[in-house]
Each structure stands twice: as structure tokens, then as C-alpha cells.
Length: 414
Image (cartoon, rainbow, N blue to C red; front, side, top):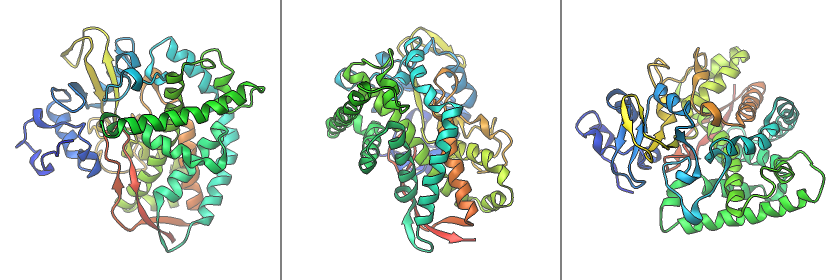
């Protein structure tokens, strides 16, 4: 993809029309903040005429994002129109999944999965989450540099996925591999990598199909694969739809939580005094989780497609137009979150973050994500441990998953 202009030139020297916020460079070098600040100030609904992903509307303010999300019958999520990311995937690369469907099919399939994340299941899983987190934290080295992303964020979330799927524990890093490729829309766009990505997803589908066949032959067992296998809405999906739903559950259950666990460490290291607030008052943990999700924003955007002529914030939107909802920008909207760049675990309205989406497509696994982050915070606090960042973070180079490749830390006793 083309190299962007230096960030120092984005204060007015570069015309708005020349700024493409889908450029992965902004996210790879963590320079996206001033770009979106300018968009929110000058053009919160902005038509990007030229990008590697084709033309699209950038929606960058909190209120406008919610206005689009609140009208799912006009602004479609359907794979038939291109799906939920800025990249258009059609033909063999088009992967139907319930988040990329409109009502009623979206509702029918979501109902199959939702009970696995209900209050009683979350309470049951909390025991397992606690046990695995304690075991992992107790095995971490004290006073030695290690990669938090690999040793903590990936290991905890991949383990949780293996349990949810009933996937063989010794092969759990398969889920990490598939998540990395499935969430990488840059790889889906690039002719040199899109077929490699597709093959990984095919391999994933064959592996999980084998589990699906096993579960279908047995009584329901409670895991997600079993629930899908025994349902009318998802038990006999075609191959591409199975692929789409598998990768949705893997990326949704892995990349988002794992990048929030890493973003948590970066945020507490950037803003002195916030961890001390948490040490002094553990009742701040729920709000600290919301603030972490807001500040990090593990998925930078979601996409909708207008299925009829409409308007957003006074701009005429034509049927077929692509709208990219930049959650990463809405979560920095100063009109909603004063001093929005600051990480403040006592922020009064942190729960207004957009990181789980809004409306009918709000993240089905939100409670589980919050549980995993909460337990990690609690177990670190219980041991008086703090992960001190000791080097530069390495960020994912893409505009969909907003996250980390590496984050060097040293665990300190306090």
C-alpha cells in the first residue's frame, strides 16, 4: 500500500481528500490519532473517493456511528453487499457469517451462539478462567524481559477458545494462526497473500468440520461446536458459511480480547498513577475494563452498506455506498469523552465506548471478554505484580484488527 504523508503535515498542509484512514501505515506506526482528530473536526462524515479498497464514506464521530448502527434495515451488514470490513470479498472469498447477515437470518444464527455467553455460562466459565489465569501468572518470570503478547494475551485467549470449542488443547495455537490470518484484511486484499489466507481458512474449516461431525453424532455437550451442530439454523450450513462463522467466533473470541489485554498494559504504562488507583481501590476494576476497551479499541472499524438512498448527518448516501464506521475514532470523540486521549480508569462514562458495537450487532461475547480482562487484573493485583513496558511495542499493520505483535515487559513486585 502507498506510504502516507508524514503525520506532521496533517494539520492542514495536506487536503482532507488526500488522507486515506484505511492505510495500514497509520496503525503500524501508531500515528492514527491526529488524523482522526482532524476528520472529526473538519469532516466527520467524509467521502473517500480513492483507496485500495475502493470508495467509501468514513464515519468518525460517536453520534454518527451510532446513528448508522441504529438503522440496520437501511445500512446493511450483509455479506451479499460486501460484509463488515472495508475490503470487498466476493465469489470464493465471500464468507457468510451471522455478523455479516441482516435480520432474520442474523437473529436465527445469533440465537444459537448466544446461550454460550449467557449469565449462567459466564459464571461457570469464570472458574476455569480464574484457574488458568492463576496458573499462567504464577509461571511468569519476575524481573526478566518477555513478550506479553505471546506469553499472556495470546495464551489466555487461545486457551479460552479451545475450551469454548472443545478443541484439542495440544493444538490450541492452531486457533491463533487461523485468527491472525482470518482477521487480516490486508492479506485478503493483497494478490500475493489472499490465496495463502484462503488456504489457511479452508484448513481451519476441515479441522473444525471434523469436530462438528463428532459432536453431531453425540448428544449436545455444551460447547459452541456442539451447539452449532445440533441447531436447525447452523447445523447444515454450506462450506463457505461454516468457514465464515468459524472465523467470526475465532477472531471475535481471540483477537479482540487479546489486544485489549495488551492495550491494558500499554495504557497503564503510558499514564502514571492509574495502576496505583487500581491498587488502592479494586472496585474500579469494572470501569477500568471499560476504559481499556475504549482506549485500545481492538477492532478499528466495522462496515455497513446502504441498501437504499438515504442520508447521514446531511450527506446524501446512495444505495450501494460503503460506510466505514471508525470505532477507533468514535472512542476518541471529545464531545463524548472529554480529554479523550487520556486513559482514566475513573472516567464516568467509559461504558459508552463503541468497542463492542451498538444495536443488533453488539458483540455476543462481550461479557466473556470483560471477565477475562477482569480476572487478569485481579490476579496481578493479588500478587502485587505490575507489567512494566521496557521497549517499543510492535503493532499490527492493518486497519481492521487494531492490535499488537509484540510488547516487551518486565514483571515487577510492588
